[in-house]
Length: 178
Image 1: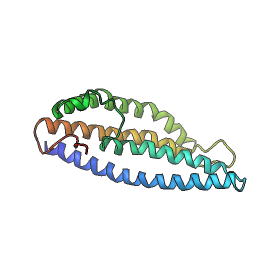
Image 2: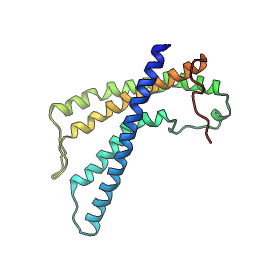
Image 3: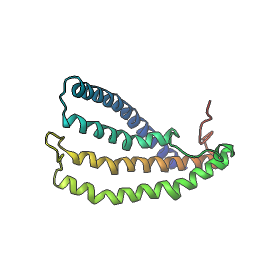
Image 4: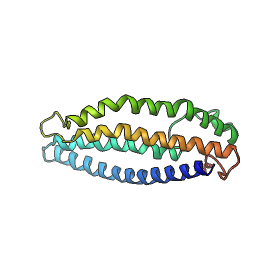
């Protein structure tokens, strides 16, 4: 169980720090969108690179920030029945669903995107648009990276449920709201 606790501590800390970094990317995204909008509608000068940068930053926020969101129980779920259950039943549901759905899905996505990303790196893919951004292969590498982080956090969350169900060191597998 010490190894499980160590894993949880390391992965939670890693995804917390990555999440904080990702949150700062939202500020960069807002600045980029603001600047791009002003340039296009006030000065009638658009830049393909700025428009591409918007969806590049958004993609990184979405992919790399997913593990942070999972860590903080921020993903959408139907809570009609779940919230009425005891913490023990919630832990069972979270643990079983992590091992049944989340972890296998992450593994499938990581495996399925391997060739896609390697091919992009092999040709050093860039934007097909004139004036677009170079190094599109870096953006494509965020797909397996994001899902690897989500996989690691999914295992951490399942381990927290296991520790909670065993009565070891975790007071609650989910914090009380309000």
